[in-house]
Amino acid sequence: MAGQRISGVSGPGFRFCLAVMAMLAVILSPARGIASAQTANPVAASATPAVAADIRVAAGPEIAALYDEGSFLAAAALAEKKTDAPSLAMAARALTASVLTRQQSPESYRKRVERAVAAADRAILANPRQIEAYLQLAAALGLKARLVGPLAGARQGLAGRARDAAAMAVRLDASLPWGYAFLGIWNVEVVNAGGPVGARLLGANLKEGLRHMESALQRNAPDPVVGHQIALALAGHDAKRHRVLIGRALTAALAAPADDFFERAIRRRAEELAAVLKRENKAELREFLKAQNSLN
Image (cartoon, rainbow, N blue to C red):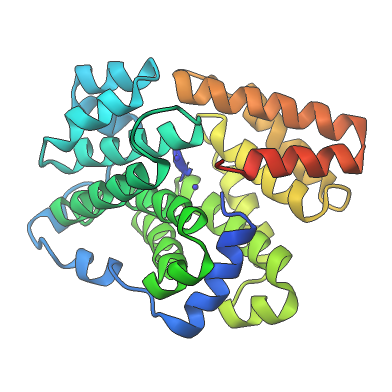
């Protein structure tokens, strides 16, 4: 959801595996982790919420420069040595970005995602009002669910934690788009993958998902990530039915400035998605979405 900016909104989006895992998680494992983090540091709880550009400044120019040029693993290694919430949130962001951009390294995707989860958790402990940390936690948990598979993900309660992290970001600052985008994508893809039964198990709802997506787009995200992720999720559900909202999301993604390596990579993907949708070839769209969603 990268706010991700990965969120990101970050994050980073959830895919079929995560949606299936999420349904199992409701039955087998309660959400955990967020509640304890909220009260872990009463002093830090009064701090001003911070997100996006704020944490880049706070993490320092060296970390920011490495991230901006796409040296994600170097940025993460430097940021992980620190103990402040902005640096640790940047570490999580850089690690998830390295996975989402398919950067090759001797270290596996799974190991990098584990490090991202740990960094985000540490950031929340350092400051329970650090919005970017919750967004990065949601993104990292979503990636972890895709990598470990539905059964292991269910045992670890990954889906519940990811959803709760995004919801916490919204509660901390309802003016920001990234938490809404994550929650919207989560609802749409659970409905898409699980059907009525799966949606009821999780409390997912298509109308709710679309409402969250509208909220995200109305908040004018200053990067291409939110629009691209929303368009990708809606295209996977029903490209024809959601063509108006997909069009708005892609317009927003392509109009936003791409200020660093990761944002430029996401905007290229938005351009590719727009081109595929324009050709209105269902088989081509299906293969395109499959390739986009794969971490192999």
